[in-house]
View 1 (cartoon, helix red, strand yellow):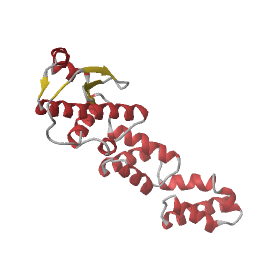
View 2 (cartoon, one colour):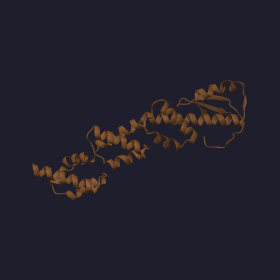
View 3 (cartoon, rainbow, N blue to C red):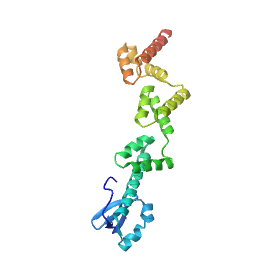
View 4 (cartoon, rainbow, N blue to C red):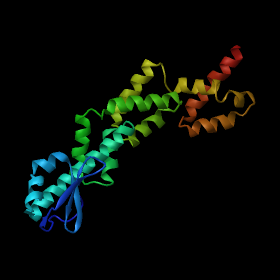
Length: 220
């Protein structure tokens, strides 16, 4: 919760459940904030509500920090339940709304629960991009944008290329024999070069691939 370091003392008058599974706290003036169930019981809030106890600003600040952690954790769970995330990518996403300590704690919780695995994420993401015939440069940039460490990305990509006998040359050969075969047959070589450049392939790679394509045609 981004706000003042201290909060004014207050009496929590009631509590209620939220759709996210948290416990919403209220004062006579209205909604205060929500905490997770463990915090609700750990800090004796049911008894405090029953007794009408006045909570100090420091006590409320502590609960507010717990609230921030609880909300960050709930948000992280919603995100990782939708798709795979790299650790840094998830942290960046959470940091748009929550403070640093809450983000760090939520990310660590996702790791503890087994929802985050950068190597598995990189393998899945790189494999998908390889099947789409993306170049090595484009794949590495994509993984970097997702927060994957460069060395890990390079290692995973090399392993995938070795396992599947893939790589830029193989990807280019497939594209020339498939998607761009009609254009090449019609003599639109320059358009094919431009299209492959937009996919992230270097001019030297494209030239050699076209030479291989022409050699296969000549052999036939």
